[in-house]
Length: 192
Image (cartoon, rainbow, N blue to C red):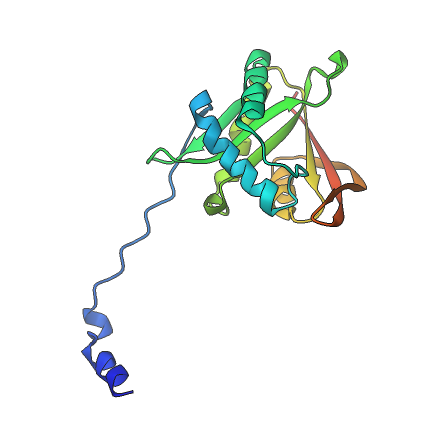
């Protein structure tokens, strides 16, 4: 107890203490993803596979699977972008991919946006969505569909609403993960 009192007395008065260093601003650059980015993209995605219901995948994505998806999207001319910190760390990613395989659906895509756990709540999702929609429109996309888990993904629903997506449906109990049934919210935005 005497030691605690001694330590309190040894501290400088508040007005003489050094001010804490301000936190560095959260910075990032949005750019096209490359093959070299895919291990980091996979790490971000697999975090959500293991720890959340925002994806219904139950097994970690392999690098081989991700490379195949990346190459397929490149052939289609669809955007796949990453957010990179000034220090070179991949903070998040976004892409669109075909909604369905049938040719008549060729102008309709589904979007995906995932942020590293330390990058949420800082405006990165908003920046990725804006850039993704701009690039999707430039690629000839007419309709974007979002399939969002109906539990645990409220921030994703709000983000999509912010960009003019409207709810077009709800499917209940279509997924089973972590011992419970989950549904999806379907949202859509026209880019015409």
